[in-house]
Image (tube, rainbow, N blue to C red; front, side, top):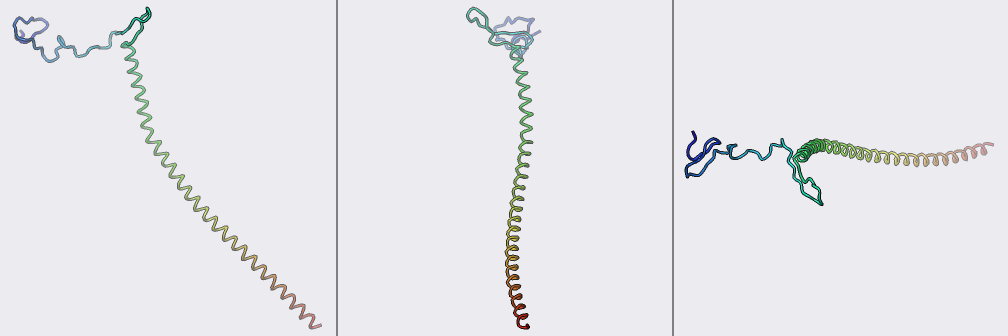
Length: 148
């Protein structure tokens, strides 16, 4: 049997002491407001017709959709780090290629400069050789004329 200061669904409190139920006994305090097994609907009358404002099914559908969206967002967020790493690697490769290209450009410029110098030296040498050859021809002609 229950004590005087407590009540159970089968007993009545006949004393003047206050009723103190056990902590959250379902007979007095339900654990949940709705178990979502029944269709609960909130509607208002607008211009002579009922308009649904809210119902449990809509809430359940929205909750399911939100979980689906959250899952997709989490998957995308997980891929962001991978994409950022790939982008950084691509930037590093591009920077290395640019540096390599600059080195190659410097080498090509140096080679072109060396080729220009070689051409100028060869041109000078040909000019000098031509001058020496003309002098030699004049000397040979002078020698031949002197012997005749």
